[in-house]
Image (cartoon, rainbow, N blue to C red; front, top):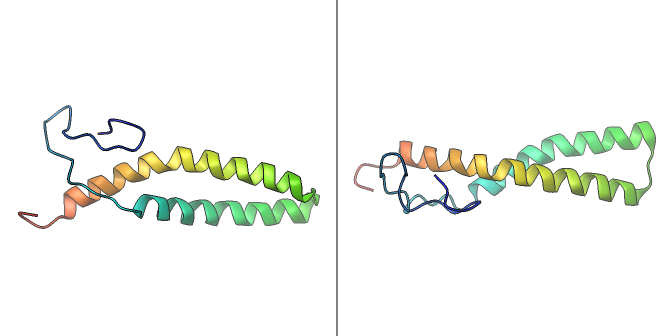
Length: 93
């Protein structure tokens, strides 16, 4: 489905379906922001209340968690968006 980390292949390797026109836009990035925000913010507040670490530790810890989560979630969510685009596009579109 992908020819690079986030680049959609021109054609499906298995069936030859043209996939170049499936544009997901910013949809996957928005979903990653919502998912990570819903997970990281409560965790950061809980860590602050329970342990009171210094601010630099918050920045290192949560920056790493957010970057790792973004790398882990962005490609699968882009795949889901391409599949949804293929499934729900109008006939002849």
